[in-house]
Amino acid sequence: MNDLLIGFVAAGLTSFVVSFLVCSLVRSTASKIGLLDRPGTRKIHSSPVPLGGGIGIWSGVIIPLLIIYLAAGTLSQRCDFLPESFTIHSDGIIQCGCRLVSLLSLASILFLLGTIDDRYGIDWRIRIVVEFIVAIITVMLGWEATFFINIPLLTKALSVFWIVGLTNSFNLLDNMDGLSSGVAVICASFLSAILLFCSPNPYSGQPQLFMGGFLILLIGSIMGFWFHNMPKARLFMGDGGAYFIGYLLSTITLSATFTGSSTSSQTILTPLCIFAVPLYDMISVIFIRLSNGKSPFEGDTNHYSHRLVSIGLSRHGAVLTIYLTTAICCIGAVFLYQVNRLTACLIGIQVAMVLVLNAILEFAARRKIKKEESLSKRS
Image (tube, rainbow, N blue to C red; front, side, top):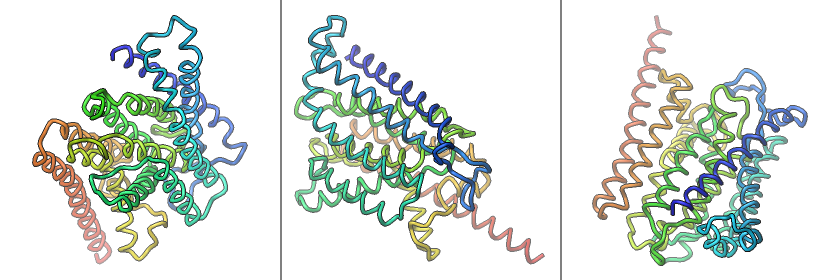
């Protein structure tokens, strides 16, 4: 296991380097191809910023995986310098190849959809339709959770909506420097740790190495981009990167045993705890838009981060606050594997209460601000 962890770290570092270098290249060429995010009514930046960070994230996942499969398919039989822990699992890596190719092909479709939207703009209706088609194909290929419900049609529908919902939640969360990418790293890190150390496969009793290792690769790729996106951002992720990240995280949670074949039904709370903050942002901003008589697909500045800024936090402070809230919710997911069902329900309630508390504080602070503004106008 130690040798495998070292291998995972090496793969993650390779992914980081590839992503970082590709993002550097994108920054220098984005303006030449018109891949820029220009200031506007909903933009908080004052000058054009290169888009296309998703290209670096995509490359940081695809290129290292090609290297890994080359090593597993050819070098493992011919090279004595590869560690035994790798050669033992090389057959398993190859067997997962077709399944992984299908997953990454569908993820790449959404990546291309988002990147084209970044450059030329695509109507939201077209994007939603494509997202649902990709999600349906994903479920048909077997990336589905049972949710411990013996109604196949219902579980398939829930799986489709989970993929589309989480994919869009990371896109909606991408509204401040370092926010969506940082939250994705926190969520993926906790998810990987759970799969490698807390949630063994119930059939084999072994850690879920394939999914856990893949997440480490994804973490390295996102971190390579994050260093370009941290305040003050020199590169934006764009819809392409957000779709790619959200889709992969959603399908991994469907494939991992805690959403389907685990013997402990309480572990279904794991993805809800880990992705509580992105889901909270998406649900709350849609609710605010609908309550204001606007389309849920019409952009505005009512996101979680914007609301924190409106009550007095700096942009950097808002991002750090959301990081902290995400980590708190994720910690709850870790303990789900150490407790009984009653305690697991209490953990789920505690995570929900953290978000409700955030909503109450936001509402109270914004109401006070509006009241002061109203009194100021009267005077």
